[in-house]
Length: 272
Image 1 (cartoon, rainbow, N blue to C red):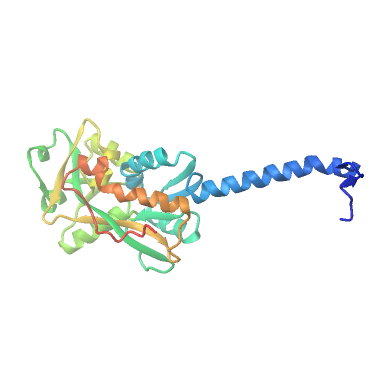
Image 2: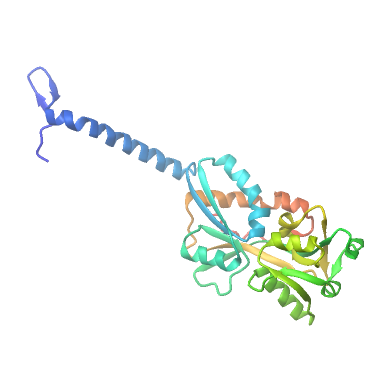
């Protein structure tokens, strides 16, 4: 800038008045650069950063708490944002780039997204503790369809799976109430209005002391779940670290709590 910051004599070098004015600004710049490099080093080592995940409510409530606990213990300065939303919103959030990845069923039409199978959970029947079903070891779809059914609305992925299963079996069910949220399903069933069928990973959300469950068979129907990501296949350092923790999903409490109802689907998850 054409400003002399130093003055020199035959015996010493000292700051000019302009140099004196610039000195505190130079120190601030030095602190800012040091802080910036330290923050970037933390981000590169996944010590800081942000991860955004969109997941079905049943996944957010059953699997992610254990994953979050393990991830937070190793990355306490990384902020994780979880959107617990229905399937269509999971896909929309992934495609818009507002989240790093989603956990849901496979999207219809793979445009702009990749889907990597992660796990599957079987459908179970949930009912009042004193319901006649309580004397049975398992319930068939034929037995289920004879009951009054409280269920999710047709816009939900769970309902769509049940509807397609009933069509394949050439059966129908008597839906007495349709709701959007799992907690409401539980309250309606607990009131004695009817029974319901949900994937096993919904159980941590809906079970209460006055409700019990049994496997739903004849046939056993599974809900396949996986990671939904943008087709670029690229993740931030923090998001990659979070995905690494998902490798331990089979050891989560939900798997142990409902043996035989949840299983891992291969090793095709993109953890890079």
